[in-house]
Image 1 (cartoon, rainbow, N blue to C red):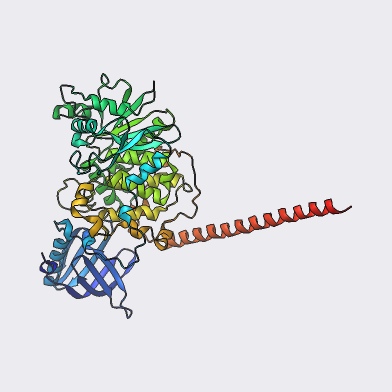
Image 2 (cartoon, rainbow, N blue to C red):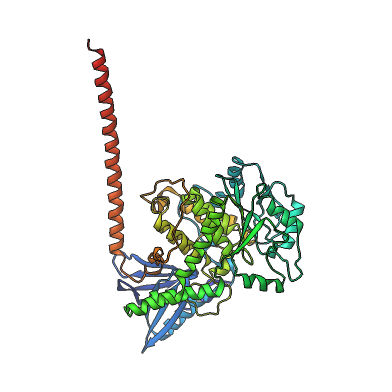
Length: 552
């Protein structure tokens, strides 16, 4: 298919661009296969806007006489308005944008056409291989092994080719366990706590059914993570009644009679349409310009967004507490093990592991616990909060995780090497990107699409020194301790950087942030001078003592 077939009007002049807190600008609008480009009429012909079609969530058309207006609502939550003279031109541009923003084929998306203008210093596709993670693990324990049982994706289509499992469990046993777990997602290592040797595993629900089916290999696998005489915890992200109802459909949960050393705890975390509706209501509340305090607070509460954050943080704290304070291993799963399970395991690692609070450590966490672990980004991020089409599998699962990280970051501002801009960047690229990192639903799909060969990795761009500096937290001080976030309602705040950034002027916030960074830099300079003066003073005192000793 040629993109030209979809572009009825490639260019329009005398178009007015309206954006919140920006003066209206008149200029030329151009449509390409992947971008909507607006250029102002200023002498320098400065580009005012480059917008990926894949970032467009919905468009609305309005007409007043011969003047047409297109309102574009984006997946990154901004709203822009284009006034286009001429009804036919406006209709042509609107239908072209609709067609180009809803392409069915993944291979027609921009990452397959994007050619980087920067020097590639690092291949991001091979930056965070599981083999490297295993090397790090092997330096502290020899109880685990790398298994290539899924090398051709036949055992579990949503798992990577390589996984980490207990050394005592062979590949034949893993194949049997895969048949006992939904979607073949058998328990694999998510995190090893060096402090006490406890492990966090993740999987999908067991297929016990109404007959109470069991799998001895499954029991042996998860028991292999227990210390002698110790118990473990199964954290099920479904409410008990949902877990019980799942048995009628062939699913279920670990029954105590077969898993006597494991205590099951249900921590309900919302998913799918409930979460998507909450997201839509929150964005609607944030866009409400009525300035009515009661209405704003009522809408914010009705969205339930902060409640979802509280529930998720509570479950992650529970998992971390079981490992660090109870000295117990943990197995986390819900139904499929691709959404709430990954939220809990990755947040628990943010709490427990200082490595995950560094930039590269956090990137490795996103790769390991989201991309390699089979979170279906293509399905979940197909639409954002504005789409008019019927929801299928969309849900802001990854955004909710990023917001929980931001909540912890806000409570421990010196413990993270990265800043808020880094989290916002990941949100934006998960929904629309020139990079191939978040395309596909799992590693099997990415391999079939040949993404590492045909597209550029986000990490290749982010980890360049000149880009990295934009995402560094100026007040970071490495903290080797476990950090325990408060989940009290008064400790949680709305993430303004995501939900209000297009609804308020940002100039003063940017100026304040710049001033803060300057103060921190100046403070570091003064601290360096103090250290130099202290050394000089110590040297002078030492010289004085030597002279006194030499004098008769």
